[in-house]
Amino acid sequence: MAKMQFGCPIYGQVLDFPGGKVAFTPEMSFISESPVERVHCYRVLDDNGQMFMSSKFKQVSEKIAVKMYSDMVTLQTMDSIFYGAQRQGRISFYATTIGEEAINIASAAALTIDDLVFPQLRSTCMKYILYREPRVMLWRGFSLQEFANQCFGNKDDYGKGRQMPIHYGSHRHNYFTVAATIATQVPHAVGAAYSLKMDRKKACVITYFGDGGTSEGDFHAALNFAAVMEVPVIFFCWNNGWAISTPTSDQFRSTLPSHVHCPAYGVRSIRVDGNDTQAIYTAVHAAREMAISENRPILIEALAFRVGHHSTSDDSTKYRPVDEIEWWRSARDPVARFRKWIESNGWWCSEDESELRTSMLHAIQVAEKADKPPSAELFTDVYNVPPSNLCEQEKFLRETMKRHPQDYMPDVPV
Image 1 (tube, rainbow, N blue to C red):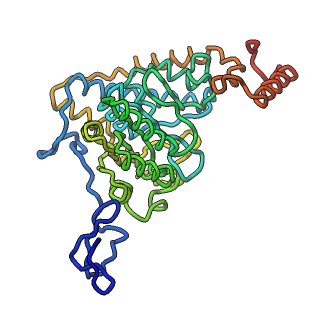
Image 2 (image 1 turned 90 degrees about the vertical axis):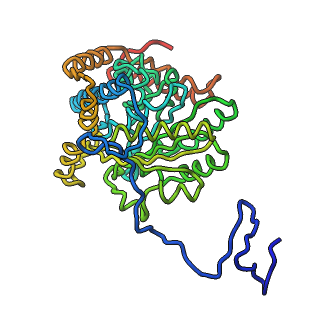
Image 3 (image 1 turned 60 degrees about the horizontal axis):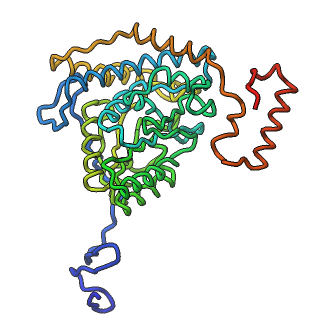
């Protein structure tokens, strides 16, 4: 017990308080609510793809670098075609990754297939950000046909047509299926990481979320849970400046979470240039090693301006200057920057977009012609024995389909 003088601990002494030692001071000083200096942002390549002389980074091989570039070009092509398909009314919804390709591919390249991915979730309200990292699956081998099957919700879609487009999932690729609620996957990721720790697996969990997701209680609960339980999880905050039409300045008084939230919860963090492929790869690679070897959570905040619209339901020119969007599209394109770095190393990379477009269009045509899943599968995969209310709903659906056959596609009998 600390010695007392006039009812107060002696100044300069340290008190052993539950949770840690506390030092006392006679000076009254409030902690500033907003630091003057913002957290520095880690970067390896400048806007012209040239490496800074003092850069510290994880070197990638020519094979990996070329594949990273190739997959980023594939993303651009896929986004262009699927966006057009939505505008033609062939699919109901889509969201592009224009300007954010480096985050998708570079983070995926720094992980292994044994690492579990909990993707960012989407929202239709103005407060939150749309998830954009399904292309992590592209790196892991998810085919163009599999992407197309999901967007069209046909019988070959792993979700059996029960999710809206771009809500991918694949057990084979250790990629958990997306759901339309914000930040609920963050504590789930911590629980999965705790399981990996208990099983002594040499793997980690990564969970992606947008800046808007940090406004959710689930985010704060997850950070505290992860820090207290000391689990191997990477929190990847995708900060593109906008949660649909709401700027970060309207969401937060302070700088975003790498500086404020993480120290408070005891989580190590870093802010990274999200347009710098090398920086993203290096940061995720280092975070993975620390998470696994030290059993600790790490948060990475990537700054990457969203060049494209929030989704096909959005027109971002209504709330952002067009010249600002175009400047980010042309001056800070992550794909062009990375290509310049590859070329400066004397490595060759091709970008046969015509072949990519042909393959993507073929995948769409196949997916579009495929049969839809039978309606009976709307009621499966949750209960071993369906409850009475679910059986009643299925019966009601069958009766409705019989009364209005012109409004429903032919179905396989139950």
